[in-house]
Amino acid sequence: MTALFSRNGKRALFPRSGSKSESKRIGEILRKETVGGLLLVAAALVAILWANSPIADSYFALRDFEIGYEPWHLKLSLGAWAADGLLAIFFFLVGLELKREFVAGDLRSPRTAIVPVAAAAGGVLVPALIYTAIVRGDADLAHGWAIPTATDIAFAVAVLALIGSRLPSALRIFLLTLAVVDDLIAIGIIAIFYTDEISFVPLGLALVTIAVYGVIAQRYRLLFGRNRFAAWLILLPIGALAWALMHASGIHATIAGVLLGFTIPVLHRKRDAENVEAPGLAEEFEHRFRPLSAGFAVPIFAFFAAGVSLGGWQGISAAAANPVTLAIIAALVLGKPIGIVATTWVTTRLLGTRLDPSYRWIDLAGVGLLAGIGFTVSLLVAELSFAAGSPEHDYAKVAVLAASVIAALAASAVLGVRNMQYARINRRLSQSISSAETPDPQE
Image (cartoon, rainbow, N blue to C red):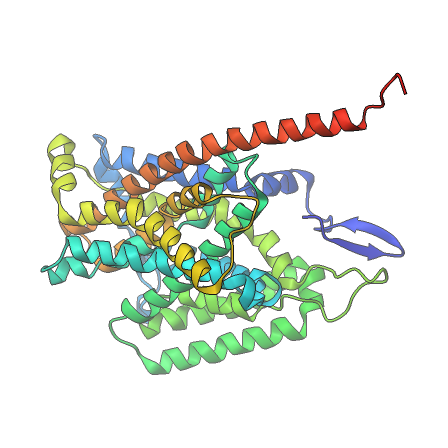
């Protein structure tokens, strides 16, 4: 973070000091997209290996172990706690990112936002159509149409960070904006299409609790910005209550995380002594809680969600031939880039605009392939689409994992070549500038 505070005329780096040096060091490591993505992949890999090992029963016993207070309908398996509870932390950060984009980011201006927003919509619609076309005629399988519509921000940005050191910064901004809008659409899909029955009394109480949470966060933003423990002592219990009420209402409890994130103020009410805008509470919260999400919540969810028994070569063959597997892989690997590139092309033609001059259409195709990395949200939608224990439940997860790997490799191939080309261009420009600045000794 490069934003600054000012105290007594002196500048201090954000975030302010106060935690132990080792905790700060680990926190900074976890804030790197590459590390978060690697932890995500590592947790999923451990789950798959354990679920297909001679001691696989211990994995499923751990995943299905129930804990919680049953009278409040909170006696859930550890896997359900990870999907409904821990993932709410991830969605809280999504809510913070969405609000920052709408208030102070690229989505603030319709003129700037229209192209990536349209691209995100195309990247949702085309995969859904491809999935539906492949599983047509089977109403039960069609229920999983939303599985290939999501993009995993952490994983996609991690791959881009690993392979795209020389790619234009505008391309990364496009990917981030695209992924943020994609998450917003996915949240709406989960809330509307994957809610069987709504209990309106708990829902109303949840919304009231979220409103109270927002009023307190807005009213005492300086307190929560300066004292990190105040948020844990005051806001966390209110947020937990809102989550429990949302869970009881029948709407997926992660929606509470998004709504809570939306209530956090993005901007400070006044500037500091040097007229420098200090980071708002949303930015400060994102900085504080990113390590908790990237280093713990999302990897634990991936660990419990990705563990499926493949059943040896016979099981792998059965999964590969199943329409659900084929539909998800085709939708993510092909549907995402086709939807994103085609919609961007149509939008730019209709509006008479152009791509950012720093990148080309082939670069956009690589970003489209990156968007085919579904992983976190796709695994969540797979959990909601098919009954636990059904073949399709496991096949869908296998397909999400396989498609994410294929999309990551394909994107790495395309963008890796482009990265080398941009590196050569940058070297030539640097040499040209150096030659121009070197004085002629005969002058």
